[in-house]
Image (cartoon, rainbow over all chains, first blue to last red; front, side, top):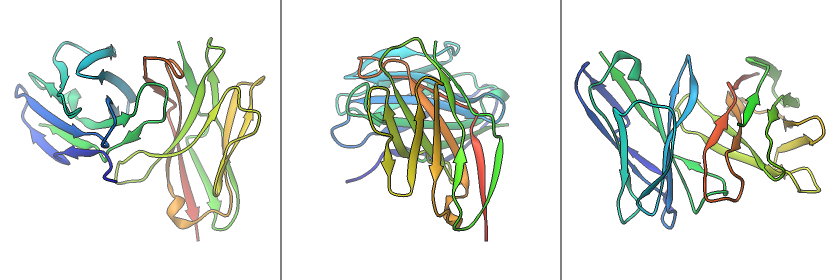
Length: 112
Length: 117
């Protein structure tokens, strides 16, 4: 059974650009969550999608957005990138809220 | 709001010895779950073990076990017979709503475990 797949693994972008990250959950999992991990702030929840609907959102500016498709794959988008957006972005999938979440290997974004 | 405290930024252990990683939590929920994840340098968060607040027995998964003390709000991870591959960051986490429709993990700051040969 394939795990959670995140693409790309590494990304370098310039300030002001935008970026789209992709997450393919485990087959059958309908909940997808996104987290940002930085050395200073640790792991912070971005948002969660279930059946194409955003159910939860963390305390991030509107530059951070996401969506989920009918096949449960999810994308997150960051517009007008800032240096502080450099982080490891982790995606997690679960069958439904309340069960353990399985994480992908993350996308390491560097903004220069 | 949920809160997780991991007071050990770093821990060292000799190979084949046992080690305990501390985790205390704060939640107003009566029913909740607690998770431990391992994050090697590759970045992936690997699920290790979970404990439900109403589980009568402490959770165990192979070499991992939870020392769950509900009254003290502590859920310490015990790794027995440490191996070099156990060197990683370890995170304790609690979801926003256990078995509910919402799912949002609050993580601690983590403990960096180094296993020495």
